[in-house]
Length: 114
Image 1 (cartoon, rainbow, N blue to C red):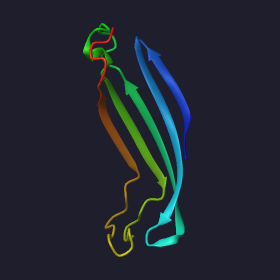
Image 2: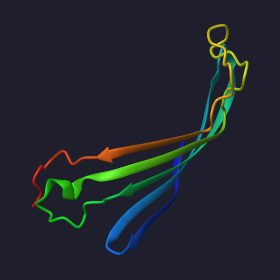
Image 3: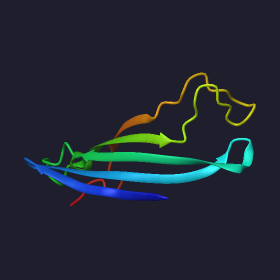
Image 4: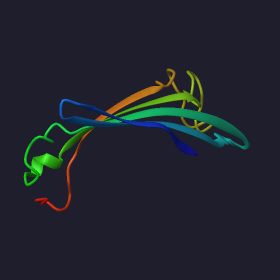
């Protein structure tokens, strides 16, 4: 189950920055034991920045954006020595709870917006 718990826009000096905060709660069967389940709680934040928004709308770069996503897994991470799935892979260290992803957002169509 995923739920957006907050969405807000920051407007400053001609910049428009939409932000979304997401809460994901899940459960899945435990590795090697179909009768047991693990709980997963995940928090995330996504920010989009449009650095070329000041360019004319007919410019292709006008629609190009930069996206940043921070994902933080609160529960459900394997610890050092855990076998997932059982007997197949052993974690030598604990899993990291945070992931930061950064990417570019390109318009697909129309290539020359009006």
